[in-house]
Length: 370
Image (tube, rainbow, N blue to C red; front, side, top):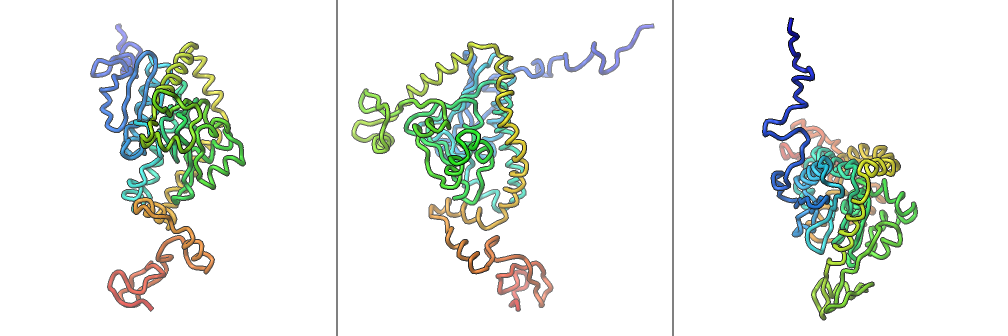
């Protein structure tokens, strides 16, 4: 009697069949087919290039950009024609400046539980770099601030233009840099320098970043006329950024450096590279996986507090945060978690409960609170 084929038998397994559009499962896609709006994506000669394309926001990533970045890394990971991935930002002013603070202020300060979901997308983006199985080069074309520095820490190798810098900002904007910086800076630069970067939030110029081991290479990026300035001073960098006195920025040397590095990386066995990355990631993975889920929950809960509200409002309003005000309130024994205090009052007139301790009138009926 003929044997019938079960739905999951090898002869009829859907895993061996092409997808409905004719592509095999996990087949790479053409970059233009992915429909990205905030990311530029190209693949050529064994190299995938992913560019965060939000220069008017200093390449701060939005919620949508995080999803596109992770999708680009996933495609490059699964494409066997790709051996090296280059990550950069558009323009010459910013590599990446972390999350879009204006989006935070508009969307997540009022809905902290949604920030937990946002952090899930950020985790997926960072983990797409860690788990790609291929060398990822951070091409730092401009400042790498906040999550931008955390992004380059997630990458395997970093080439940096000399006019740029790296910096953390967490404690100055009401947040904590626990999306990679608190986990990895002690591994990369040592405990004391990590604390200096995280507590002071001061810029680390390119040459110092190289000397500290934050990045691998620094390329000249300031020119005067046709001459390259090998170690441009802060004043020469300012003039180049403004186009004054014949100074200008030029990323040509950085591109030569990145292209040469990619070529050298491609001259190796891909599976050996993949496992070398996995083995070398062991301490990064340990520090990340021990802390990041806790960080996700803490940051979402912290968004209900006064510190991030003040930090985000100060950024949007282009003013200095009122650090002293919160410290002075704490010293006087007043509440600092929320502007109007804990929800402990009850209205004797209408019975409304959980009213803020600092309110003088009921928000429901308007009666004075005793």
